[in-house]
Structure formats: structure tokens, C-alpha cells
Image (cartoon, rainbow, N blue to C red; front, side):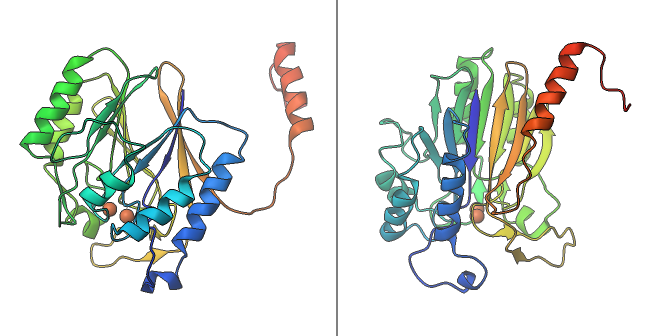
Amino acid sequence: MLIAQISDCHIRSDESPFDQLVNSTETLERVVAHLMSSGIKPDVLLATGDLTESGTEEEYSLLLELLAPIDIPVLPIPGNHDEGQQFRQALTNYLPEKLPQTHCSYVEDSYPVRLIGLDTSLEGRHDGHFDDERFEWLEEQLHQSPDKPTVIFTHFPPFMSGIHFMDISGLKDPERFCSLVEKNPQVKLVTSGHLHRPITTMIGTSIASVCPSTSHQLGLDLNPASGSLVDEPPSYQLHRWDGIRFVTHTAVAWEGKTFDLSSWINKVAEQASSGSGFPKK
Ligand SMILES: [Fe+2]
Ligand SMILES: [Fe+2]
């Protein structure tokens, strides 16, 4: 199974100081075109929040136009820049009919891997909370299927990244989330957004990954007193499940040079089938 992920598109309909750095409409267009023309068709696309900058109707309308060329199922989860009610209304065609009243969390169980979308965003706030209600909801979903490989996709990373100003303004109670995942080894991947960089760690036996943004990235700055936004290229991820483990690839929507290796690849295949390995001479 192949799972694609986009995050933090920050689609804007009004002028913004960020326009000087990146045009988030143009970069999402590039990411969608790159994904759709890659020759690889993922089974599903996760969209892990901050899909718009301010959660307005106009922004969601533009977002839907930009996502229209995608011909695989899209599973969205809101982030702190989204607005809960607008998000549910605008993305209703992508969401299940039944959702909890106070958070937009759900389970998609029609694939070889179970996909659990967890919404920890809060109305009117930029920080998130894995509160009692969400804890009980997630515990119940995990309890229902303890043996099937599972992915949890969510906006806020449930760990300290070392990017200090984001860590102190992010998810409350990340340890509570981690202890629940540690008790559920069927969780093979916890993937999130919010940090606008590709980041990897572990929670128990699960990979924990952050998908970079389709728009601007955060500068890699581990000095607690500083931080920046940078125009590193728009990116997305592909999570490949082979029945045993996930392997995560970060794809960059970038018009770079290409050197075709097809003839070399044919020689490698011939050498591999000869059984003599790969001696230098
Ligand atoms: Fe974001
Ligand atoms: Fe965010």
C-alpha cells in the first residue's frame, strides 16, 4: 500500500507578508502536478492540516479547485490555521458522514492498513490538546482493532522536535498520546504536519514522522532564541507499506535536471540475476 501525504498548504485568498517568500497557491499547484505526473498512483492522500491560512470560505473554495485534479481518495484533518465548521462544510465530500461533535476525527478501514485521522485542533486557538475526549475516542478506536497495522495521521506532532518556539506553542499532553501509542504496537506510523520540515523520530515501536509543507518551510534552526521561514522547495511524502514496515520518502516538487539511468538499471538487473554480486572490476 502506498500512502501520499501533503500538509500545511496555507492557501490564502488575501494579500499576505508571506507572499514575498512564496505563493502558496502556485506551490500547491506544483505539488499536485508533480504527484499526479509521477507515474506512481498512491492508494490514498492524507492532508494533515493548515490547509488554509485563515479558514475562510474563499480560501476553502480555492483549496478545492487546487485539489480537483487529484483522482485518488483524499483524507483531510484540520490544523490550527483551519476553522472547524468551515473545514467540515467545505470538505464534506472528503469526510465521513458521521463525525464526533467537537473534533473532526475518523477512521478509514477499507485498506490493508487502518487509517485513523486524529483532530487535536481547538476552536479559536493555535495550540492543540489531546484532551480527555480525544484520548477516550482514540483509545476506543485502537481497542477495536488491536492486530491490524495502523497509521495515525494528525496535525500536531506529539513530541518535542527541538524547534523550540514551535514545541512550546504546539500540542498539550504529547506524553499522554505517546503512552497510548506505546501500548498499541499495531500503530506502525504516526504522521503529522505543523512543523513545515521533514522530521523523523520514534514513539514506542512506531515511526513518528512530520511531512514538510507544500508552501514555505521552517528554517532548520535549533537555537531556542531564533527561527525563520525559508523558501526551500514545496514537498510531500510517500509512505510505502510492504506488509512489515513503512518506508517514508520525501518528494520535492522541483524543476531540476534529470539524468536518465535506464540503461545502467538494465545492467544492474542482469548482474543481480547472474548471482555473482557486484565486484568493482
Ligand atoms: Fe502550518
Ligand atoms: Fe499548524
